[in-house]
Length: 269
Image 1 (cartoon, helix red, strand yellow):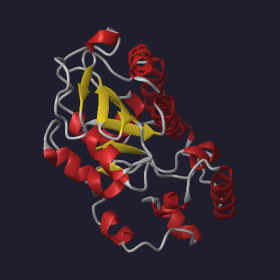
Image 2: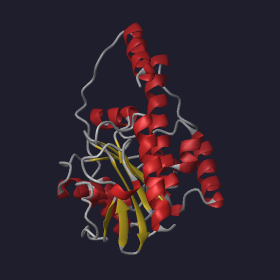
Image 3: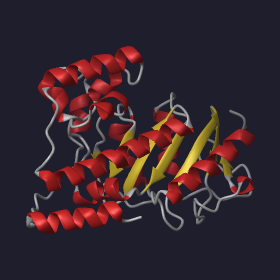
Image 4: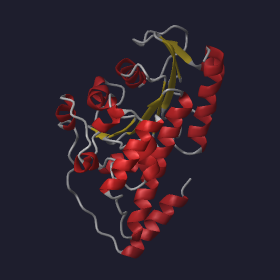
């Protein structure tokens, strides 16, 4: 993709993020890696719904400005992903409400409840909290980037990435849709996990079809261990040691209160 096409696409995706309430105000950031050392990114302090093609920032892979536009202060998370994953050419960071609710509650999206998610995304781990725009955030992400295509950041939001910007956006959208279904299913008594043999079949299908590679077997999913098909890479134990623990807090609602709360959430723009 040339730079002109990339500028047009970033503006288009920015409007979609804003219109779907995945971001508000100047939240979120998007980028495309144009070549091995050139990144086009959304500018700082600008609504993703009101960007212009000539207002985007251009940097190198170390974040050095290459035009007169200032990139988002969270560009460092994009650069980390690009350096760790040569296959990745685009990144979307946003605060989609249901996915971010998981992050705020200290929960990963890692239950095998939807076959389509296992096929195309895999599980989404929760990284430790890091102050936005600092190296705390990127340090907490490092252990997970190699084997996952989307992450939840504790008390912050979500990031998804892919071989092009549409794939990165689609993965973010899948993350948010899955989180919404998981939350709503709790009003009906909870979600049922897919059986182990079905999970194994789905993983074989996704690898044969090219949706995800064998690297995804190294994802921080409890159900992979249960099926006995998780990877044997030496670093798996190391990055799983970084998975943050929840504080174990529990909240009680009547069924009627929970249904009303979830209905309001589902209907919110």
